[in-house]
Length: 89
Image (cartoon, rainbow, N blue to C red; front, side, top):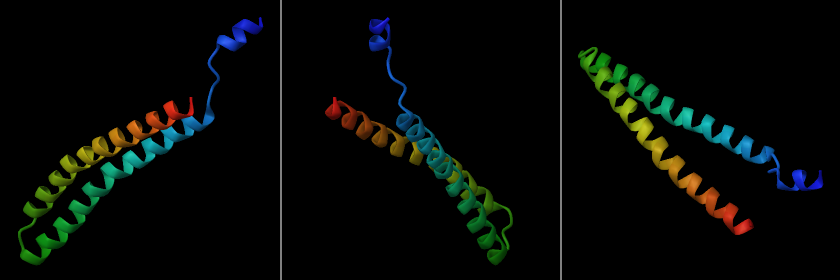
């Protein structure tokens, strides 16, 4: 019975909370560039009387740039976390 408990991996709540935090931050990193592109594009379009072209362009730039930012940020963050875990063991 003791052998079974020792072979089972302990559940780590800190890792679960870390993953949830990463997911929340990744969601914001996708949403913020899109919303900034939308808002800035709308202001420029109203000023330059070109509605909706600049809004569409900057929103698409935000839609492409957001996931790229998330990929770069998550890959470095996960790499750092794995290195930290291996140093602890």
